[in-house]
Image 1 (cartoon, rainbow, N blue to C red):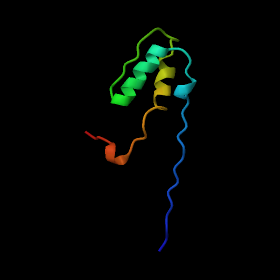
Image 2 (tube, rainbow, N blue to C red):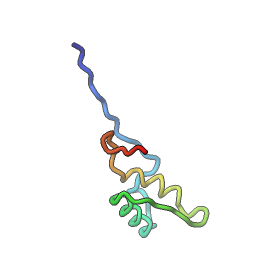
Image 3 (cartoon, helix red, strand yellow):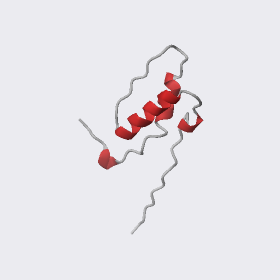
Image 4 (cartoon, rainbow, N blue to C red):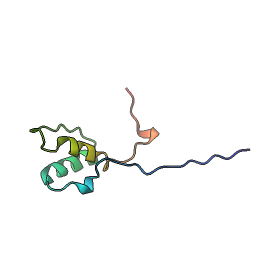
Length: 72
């Protein structure tokens, strides 16, 4: 009987949440949203860091497991 092994790679993120400097109020809001599973909408002027913060958000989210996925 053949045995199979599962290899798990460390996820790579384009922006790590730890690397974000400043924006303390936005970082706190994203931490609360991530911890509570809440939705977030980012608004502001061009160049204010909305995309960077959205990309950094995925680095603090827990990994998705097949048993926790919700399909509608």
